[in-house]
Image (cartoon, rainbow, N blue to C red; front, side, top):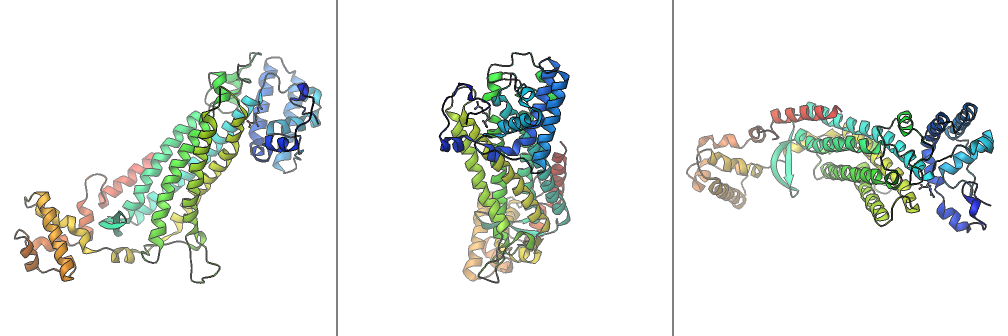
Length: 460
Ligand code: ARG
């Protein structure tokens, strides 16, 4: 059968596989409400230019609202092989409701090229605003846990080797900082997403003097795309969203990896709530951190979508090419993946319990070797020398099988005469934490300051 929308110059039918290959309705139906809102704004602007009479406009508006209801109530019947995408489906249905005589005037001066870009931007803007809320929730949980659990000391790691004592809150806030940057970046992305391409036409612009500003305002856009060719060619708003989403997922993935390690039997620093764990079908004792593993795993999918879309776009010539349709499906999935992942992360973090005794038990005296070196620095010994001396103390502890803090005063003096009785004060994890009180450090006062900084970043 001939396509109603563009079939005028065609004589033969499409290869059946080509029909399926071409159609996007099974995923771009997600844009149904944006498509209808955009069409109502379009019809109103055309009415204001005298293209549609008041009666025609009102018939179109009422008809489109009915189509919207059908989608909402899951009553919309997609016509396989006819409804190629959401734009054709909605217009086909409108024609059935109000008659093609009037419905056929809706698309005057409009191209699906501007239509799809408009729908995608509207959808993306609204979803990104929801995600902004999810991310804010995550940051709030981090800030509030960091505040209430500020007493707890744990090992901090480099190379996954025990390095120096830190506050558990300091660990949480380290990711909080990454996520706060993600929030700031997201707000910048939304500004560029939320610009209207409606009125750009197929590529050259609108010949009926349509009021683009009025349509943009009706649709809640913050401004226009000021070049009609750019307006239909541009999928940077999707690429940028995916770059943003990839960076966020990268942060979430590392965060998840830390918690997977910390929840393992060997560490047991944290216990995940049942709500975010699953069991094994074979091993009755198992409680697995699937939520975190899925975050880590789905990050790969997100990066792939970003790279894939850039590949799709990089070689196409100016303005609209059908390749661009390939931006829709990954956009929908990417945004869902990112939004879900943030919410799962918030759920995991707000319900996990910490096991401070295990955190303490994992601290070892050699983690204070830097503090031992710093002790001598305070007595005027050059750091390079104190590093060496402290290293000798570590070696002595290892050789004699005595924990560093249990070495006798004589043994320490044997390594260096400048150790005095007050050296015992150094063997204190809490003290080590409190010593790091320059801004950004792990001392309590610094951590409290970080919490304030984080809270400020939430205000848009
Ligand atoms: N479904 C198409 C897309 O998502 C709509 C635009 C089609 N435009 C065209 N000239 N074939 O890109």
